[in-house]
Length: 347
Image (cartoon, rainbow, N blue to C red):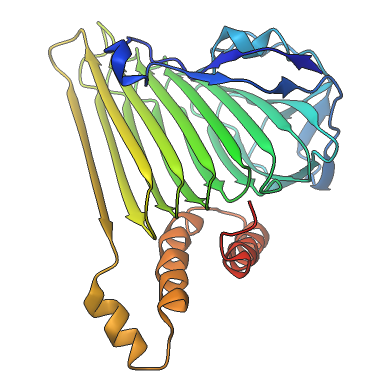
């Protein structure tokens, strides 16, 4: 393992240094051992190999991480409309993993990735969506609540390609998430639905960067989550409307529920614009449970703690509904119930 401070999740354009939000510093170690996934489901229409041709796709995590990622990798390719694939990664003992996904022209590639285990977890996913293709990626992060987790996802979309991402953060003591998407081709689209529950004394640092290069491209980033006692969360969301992307539209929104006290929440929406005929939107809402809801549920014999879990479960259910694979939906629901049973005090 390598021990050094690694700069993660840098903003494309830095803001005031005094705010200490331009980047994250990871003080831990990147494991050298590779994590080989358990392939729970892989349709015959998908090809599996060890090709690293997509390693050059941009990252939002930063160059500081990439130099440490040299473990074993796998490539999954789709040349037609494929059924869902499922990969399980167990990071027990501390491991890194590299996954490459390639949807050929007009192909469909639906895949779900589940992250578990007791140990530092580092997962890199690079995606190429060729013209007319669609990639549906679901990532369920349920690593042990005392562990460090880094997830780095990068994607390039060509003409009329679609990338749909559903990301669920349920584990990890210090959790870093980076997502970089290049909408290079005309009419390409990106949709992200991110859900999280940051438990007591845990932290979550997210960096989403979408670059609109092609004309009439569209991106929609939605994040929704729960912050419990003494938790911290930072969400950086960048929509970069690059010259030449006329007709492009980008939207980012976040909805945060506070349970308990002493949370630190930072939401940094950033819209960069170098083109006139474009549209960029952002918004965020934050609040606590309405006392009337607690009273209403209490009148029916539901404790305040159980009421909080019910509301939190409902917020995450809305994110889970975007997962296309029913088996993974069921798993996600069971993992949420496990998080609630822990009560957020096991960090």
